[in-house]
Image 1 (cartoon, rainbow, N blue to C red):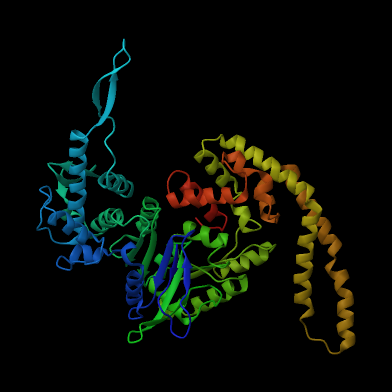
Image 2: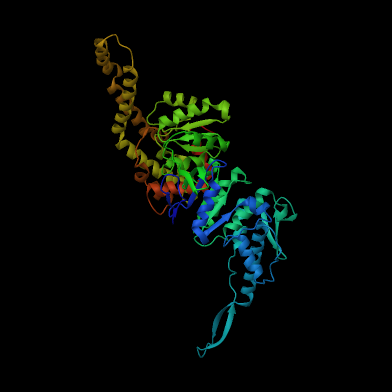
Length: 539
């Protein structure tokens, strides 16, 4: 689906293609006009638009929505139609939503009982139909069934029961039951969001106002991941001022609404990108998140970093800044202003053939460097491979042995070229450092340059790398190989995806599988997360 955004001050409106990533995040400071912006989008979209607001649903009992297809209008259509099942005096969107669910459930049961599927009864001797016989097999699934299923995924210890046409709740920790009015505000918000999302029109555009409000931060990501999976036909548009929530919708498009001209019906807005580093707007958004900040490399949209690290470092607001220099400088700058915002900032940069001295220095500056050569190697950590293998019910010992053998063979064949690349890096760094000095005259400079080759001894460095690398191979030192081996095609050439039991034997399938496991946050997710954090020297 392609959506044309509202009129833009001084420029043409932007267009968003949601056919692949079904998420748009509208973000802006209070008073920036983001709510007006969303309302204009709903107006332009028409009957396919559907709005959800937990605050309005839970506390706006007399605030009835007139939007076509809204919970309030669906409730009115049922009660105005003279249904004897549902009361006509229920107030508030939340209670009306529950009533609609119970109404559908009762209608489903009645239809199942009195309008069963018929099958023919054939005479054994004549082969002719002698009667039509009813058959009752499976009760069709309802919205209430799906609500109960997802509720118990979010709250495994809590149960939803239906007794005498009423929805009641119970806990594994107690024998007591209670009504929805006894739920906490957060629990009611979860119940509302799950239930209301199922009333959105097919192929609709769901607008969610303040999607993190009333929700516990630890459950926000998984809840909205689950709701989006529940409605794969819909596009979700989130209206928020919290960049930390925006970071949980990693594949979505973020629209930054800066200001609004109500008279002209135009807005100053743009897509948020990472190219500009920490400008004032991004800074204020991050401060508003009230979480420690983690700056990473990459473009924030397509990079593996942006997809992986928010799932690993969930206690941080993760922000992509492009290159490693920008990450290092932004981390330093942000921490220098801690007296103002009282937040901690860290950074992550690739290893890029840095030696242990460089790594140690950066870690002291709150810049974390992995113990693997590049980000692709993170997915090849032994504990990660074993966790994926277990997830797909493969023998983890057999899988890892096979992958390790492939990697060691690749590294051995590439050993001299890898040693040369590491040598070149060392020589380059040394020359840059040694040449940056003061010299009395040109003769001294020439003398210094002529001495550099002998003092640096590149052949000696190269031969030492070769010896070290051969030792890694002979000793089967898999971890050391991952620390030094730069090879972008490693995941594909090792056939790790096929070994783990994936249908497609390619790099992207393997990475997507790991990201899916982490998003689901069950089974091997914890083992993968711990293994990756450990490679940065954390936990």
